[in-house]
Image (cartoon, rainbow, N blue to C red):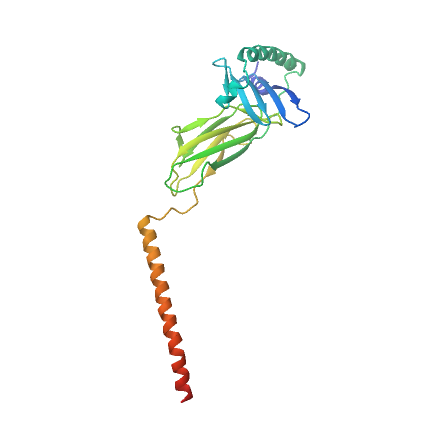
Length: 248
C-alpha cells in the first residue's frame, strides 16, 4: 500500500459516546471511546459535566484518575476498556473497508497560551499552552524559549474529551519570566494549515521596583508636597500686602 494510503488510514477514526442524562438536574455522564490506526491508537475515558473522572492508561493497563478522591467514589475497570477497545478496533477495520478507505477530515485545533498566575517579572510562574478542538487526538506540543527548545520543567496532560466529540490537552512550562524573553508553544497536528504552528507569548509588564527605589520615590513625593504647602502659605500672606500697596 502506498505511503499516501497509509496517511489516509492514520486519519480514519471512530468515536463512540454513550450519554445518560439525569432528568431532574440535567447532569450528563459521557463514556468516550476512540480508536485510530496511528499512535496514540486508543482513548477511553469517563467524564461528568465536562469534567473527566478517569481515563484508561493502555500502556500500563490501569485507570488513571483526574483526582485521587474520584477513585473512592467510582470504580474504573481497565480490563473492560481493553476488551471494548478490541471490539472497536475490529469495527474500525470493517468500516474502513466499507468506506473504501476514505480519509476522515481532521479538525483545525485552537491554541491559547497564558500564565497560571499574574505576571511579575523575575518571579516563578507557569506558562500554560491550551489546545482545544483536537480531532483526531494525535498532536505534538513543545516549548521554545528565545528560539531554543525547552524540556526541563515541561509536563503534559492526557487528552480530555469535550462534549462536541473533540478533545483538548494542556502543556505546562515552569519558568521565571524576565524582560525580553520570548516563549513559543509549538503545535503539530494534521488539521493545522502550517506544521508546526507557533503561538508566541512574552511578558509585557514592567518589573517591580526595589524597596530602596520605592522609598526614594516616596521621599521625593513627600518633599514636593511639603514644599507646595509652604509655597501656598507664602502666596496667601503675600496677597493682602499687594492689595494694600495698590490701595496706597
